[in-house]
Length: 120
Image 1 (cartoon, helix red, strand yellow):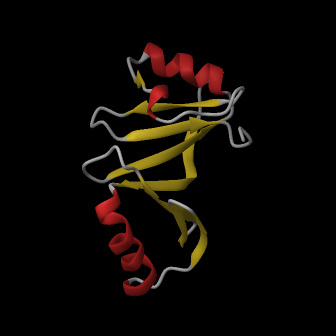
Image 2: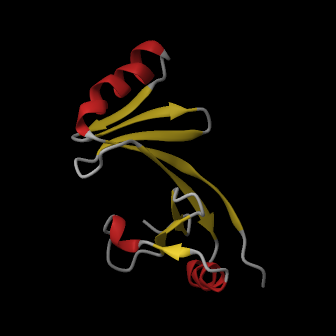
Image 3: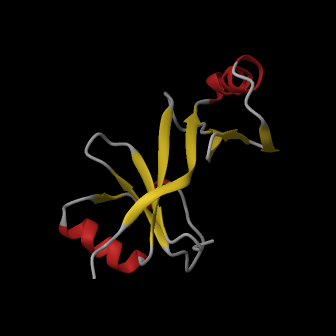
């Protein structure tokens, strides 16, 4: 069986607090994206076929973009990624116990959530 990956439905912008309000206003007021949720330090927007999440990340000094990949079998995908030398970084943000997914970085240090579509 070949490991299969496809783009997920979530993109996250992790922002230091001093960039949060202006960035939310940019997507809401300047670009005019439909806001889908606001819960504390996280605001979501419809971004075409995906969701754009804007999160306050006080521990960061600059903005980061985090992407999502779906796979049918996370255990198999994790082995495939490990065999390819891909760096796991699960400590970057805690995930629920038993969650079928994990965090990786690409060679340019862009964070990716790799998960089964129904992992939540």
